[in-house]
Image (cartoon, rainbow, N blue to C red; front, side, top):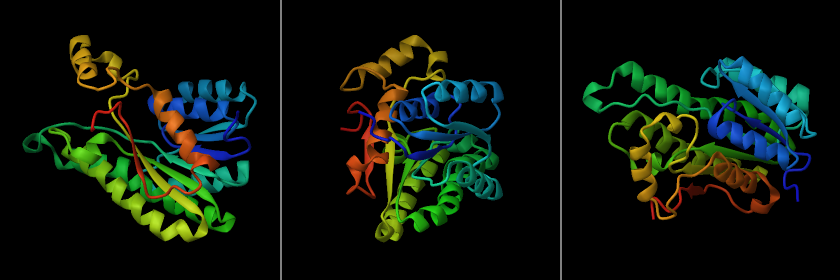
Length: 248
């Protein structure tokens, strides 16, 4: 059963990792996918082709969600190319980890800008279209770190916790127009980035999770499908932890 048949989605930062997983699963569920990438043109072209082969409309856009004007321009282009915009997934994000005593101002500002300011930029850009439609689902990708904090990640935790506060405020502001805003807080998700880590360290992390495994991009994507589909029509302002029980 295709839960997103005929819906149009924007996914930021989708050329790899979790974003790519969301784009693929969305396409399999019948959604047309507009996705952004920052630098990896080759990966973006490959993904575009792969998604189109699933029989939906897909297009990659080189766009930096952390830049206000670029976000406005992106949404304008997507609205022209796709028509309505039903789902926005704010997934673009970076880390620049360090203990506070060693963290530079630049590393703090950059993480806040890419992870948190981009959510403001994209929500503001897409808001007008969704208000006109009187419908829409906005899904913001936070983290368990935004819920409980983490040593060495003050900048990342602040950005991801800020996203939760922003989303709950948007749920209150936009709910009367049938625009829903929810948050997904992934736990330890295994992507190409974690593949570069020491296997013993990763095994230790897996062992500390009640379900005894790391999550996959597909695990996150399935939760996004639920929040983007009409199955969640009465759910807004919520934080869904997809973490294998890590924060239980």
